[in-house]
Image (cartoon, rainbow, N blue to C red):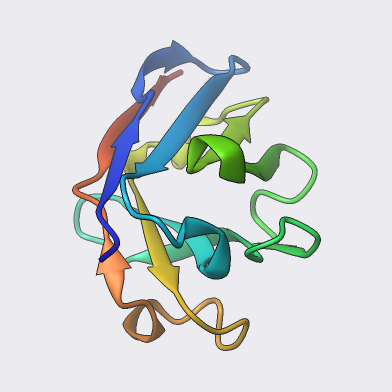
Length: 124
């Protein structure tokens, strides 16, 4: 069973940085692909980044490429999202999610497990 808990959100000025964490208490975390999605008020859930179970493969949305970095530490059952050069349009609730396959990574409905989300607010 996968149970995901996000942390690390907060209020940051434009140009600042935050690191989000997604922790799982399960035993098979390293076998799951983990993705980060975000949802701003009035908007649909948007793909941000994904990482393979080993951490060897990653994928980013164009809107965050070069600014965000996804990584994982399977010994700690944790996936991170390092967010640099934050912009006001990055403001959203960020969710991590897990699925068993490295496929359709940008589609939220392909992920089986979701965390409750952590709020990121970037002030201008």
